[in-house]
Length: 448
Image: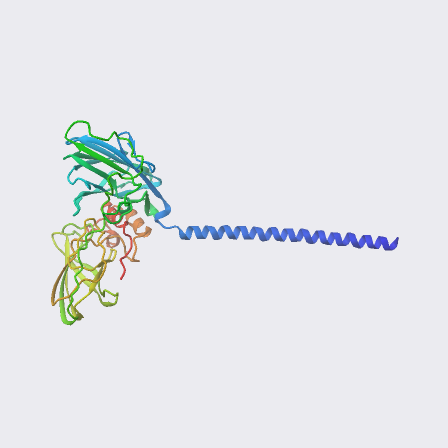
């Protein structure tokens, strides 16, 4: 009996010890699981926040509307018709989960029948913005038109809205068929504070003019004008979701022309004098608050090898251009490109002595095609040096730059003017905000 009692006690003690061990193990396991869950949540949150860009913090959806017909993803074309000399109204509806403080919109029209429509006016029907900064029509070399419209809200953030409807009014000037599109990949919508530039969806697929897929599933208005009678089209969406007459989107990139490279052997020029002529975004005449601007100039081989870099003083002219003269010693004569970066500007890469662009900022350098002579004139005044990379510069237009200008509206203090006055008129205002808004479509320095 004594041994049985001892055995029972031992078993009871062992069971107690085992139970305590199990409980401790469970508590330890629970603690470990809790630590892993918390750590995982922190890690995933960090990964998510660190990979979010300024552009994807908000998305702006848009549709086009004519009469009772509104474009959708499933039926992206509205067909409308009218007689010549009749007004034709088209609405662009922008909506977002975040507040909108400005828009820079580019529309194309007259792609199929040049001269069919004439732009008359626009109306901010919901009074979402209130300040017009740019309203202009560009004639593209391929025959169609681009309407450039920039609107901003000068009020404080409490007056911002999440939706805007802009009504465009055209007049039929000749019979024909065309489409009106928002070129979303070239347009920009911005919001207050650190939100920066918003993504516009759906995006136009900008590509070659003969690419039949470039404007698939992109909202557009199919417009037919006739001289009388009942033209085709009843205002119903096109069920196929594609453009029945092919692509109408313009290739937004500016014409660069042929690059000419000398076939003659390279030689070293003892001296090459260059007269530079450039144009800064937002300055159309003699600036009120600048007698000169220092810009950084770089000379590079087509291979990317740097030949020269220097700071050059540009002086303003009455027509809004800026000129500078400089001289290079012992420089090879062929196959170069030039980089220019102003004190508040994105860097531009240029590979022609007379480049051109239709829409500001769209010129692109493809190769080194500049050849030096003893005396040279490099006229870069038909492209723009885009502004918005404020001192201290970091090669990008970011939320810091945007916030600085927006938070200093109306300031004329020397320190603020030196940093945020992009058009050199002596005040930081909506004009400067619009300039930086326009440049947001490009945002980065063009690198060597």
